[in-house]
Length: 79
Image (cartoon, rainbow, N blue to C red):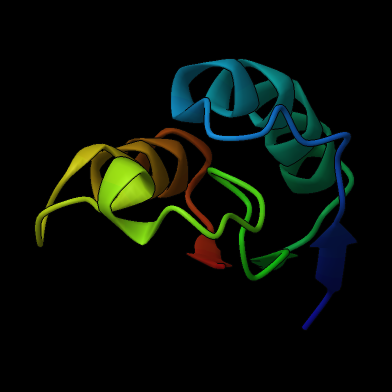
């Protein structure tokens, strides 16, 4: 199994901007043959001391992004 690690330049506390940056990197990893793609721990928001500001509900935007990307590229993604 080919595994890819993806690290991007995080936009602090801005999930949508981070999703835009990650999507092409995920696509590139998938097209290079990766079946499992590992993102950084705080891939969607970066580290923040304001947990209330960055909190997302279960099944929220970050999960939807991961599911959509995994389905689009037929890969497994963790982050």
